[in-house]
Amino acid sequence: MRVIETEIPAVKLVELDVFPDERGSFVRHWNERDWETAGMGPFVADNVSFSHAGVLRGLHVQIVEPQGKLVSALAGAIYDVAVDLREGSATFG
Image (cartoon, rainbow, N blue to C red; front, side, top):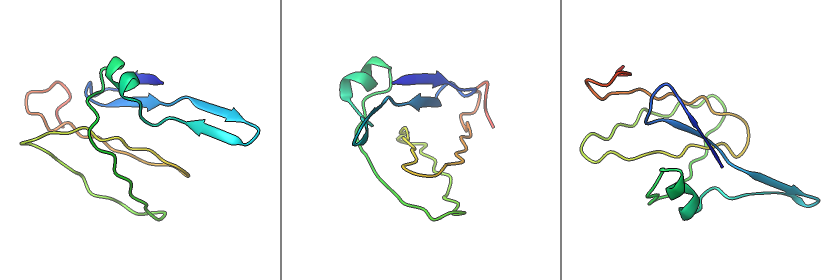
């Protein structure tokens, strides 16, 4: 697992390790030790949604109880936008 920094310090790009073999491939999306070691824990929920091509999902904001989001594509591609809404932050807006 590789964690890549982005322009917004709280937003990370995570590249998971893929283990191919003659049957296909295996990817471990979450392992408590790996995510904690990368400073990305605790990980407390895993939700899955499916969207058809061209679907725009809403911007989700948590002010009172902020939480991280893990976004991944099982097939196709994702255009994901992160907006820093923390007033006073160097990357605000």
